Image (cartoon, rainbow, N blue to C red; front, side, top):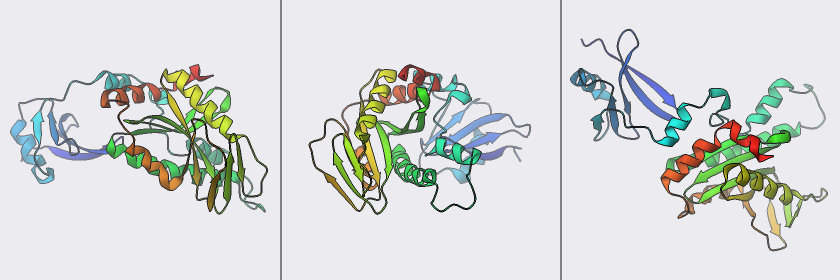
Length: 268
């Protein structure tokens, strides 16, 4: 018996299998997605490979851990309290509801819960783009108490998404006004553009504004829209079909920058 243990863990949505001694010290880890076994020491190479044998699928590369990129180094030095990457879709609303759930019985549903459901629907769709080289940050805080619902960074560029709950409603868009059902029109596209402009200033990169409508019955765009995109929640994954703007290294560098809470202080 080698005395080695295999311990599965999840980091940033990816599974890693760590090979540890009985005292908890790590000898190696297997990154299944990358197809690589990273050895911290070559002395017990054969024992590590033997204990990982039942877990390995396909061909793998075995060797020392790769040298971290500048983006990875920036992430490793970021304080956990300042890292926005772990934010869940609707993070700010989840915290608000946890602190103040409201009265147990009310005539009308809490609008925060509808907004949360909408942000979770869009956020879950965007998180699926991670598999094709995109990164999404949720509930990005802006000075003054505002926030960007979702910031998406990938080969097609950067997009700031504002989400609107529109279930069973007809939505009419007449730039900059947005009308939801029979409610009064609101100049919502001004805010959508302003959020993207603030993100562009903070990141020193072009950020495209997007209005994401969740479950509308119909969408009528009555005028030519300037810069902003209007998408249904079923269409947001189509952003992955855009490309040719950023290289993978640029995507990682911008993501490392954007996940730092301190960067957004400059977005006033």
